[in-house]
Image (tube, rainbow, N blue to C red; front, side, top):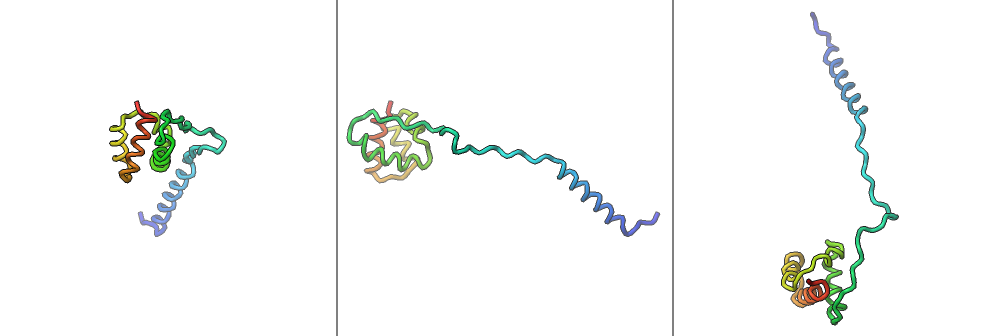
Length: 115
């Protein structure tokens, strides 16, 4: 039996047709819905600090809001109750602050959201 010069072309055309058929009949994945602006926020508001010192309402809170909320929602900061030493270790591990800012932040967190 003699091969026709069109046999390879017909074979390739059949393969291409099979690929198109499979691709067109496979359902596309459904995209996941993104939250809309009307959905309520999942972040709980920050509770008021319990300490009444100047640090509790001053620099420590400002530093916390500026530094901690870059990566964490505020509720994450106040849900974990830590001692001053524990807060100091956590802060040192997460951000680089001046000594004064570090001390003010540790004092604020330990007094306001400590154990």
